[in-house]
Image 1 (cartoon, rainbow, N blue to C red):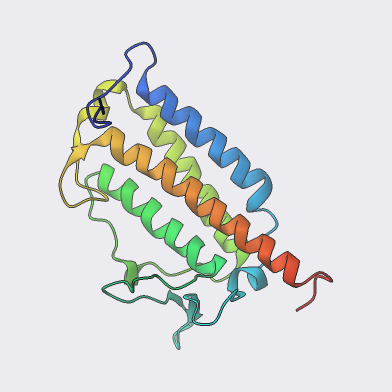
Image 2 (image 1 turned 90 degrees about the vertical axis):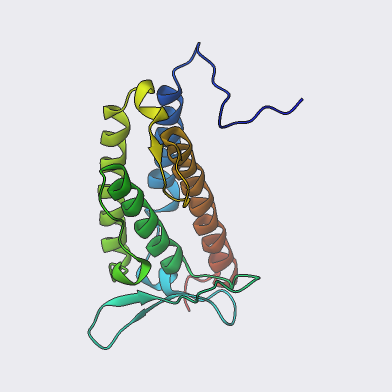
Length: 188
């Protein structure tokens, strides 16, 4: 028998405590290993032809490559594009939880350097930890229509954030490994 994850809960362990623990572990690994070694060069390095990246616009801002609908299969991406995507969706869900309208992708610039990315991600992580600390298990059943069009229990959006963060950090680590393997001397 398959149990629907949207309705199954274990009353012996508060769900919010599990979500907090999962985020803390993920962020500890990300901020302790994957993110500190990023450089602007590795963020902009294109691991394959046709990559989506972030590119400097004539006004000096950095904008992501994007297409609607998204191509299938999706193109390869740079670390810069992944970090932009994290900033976009992480700020977006925090806005949605506060009852604000999340910014559209074209309204969110890439910060322009690895140092600025790390600063922005650290700020979002702190805000996320504070948000998780402010929630109780009772809050988790409130409906939220982000990132999906139809409302679902908040706990599913919170779990999505943790899962999406794990996936994105793993992607960054993988691209960094490919970069390191293809640049053994550390030079371009």
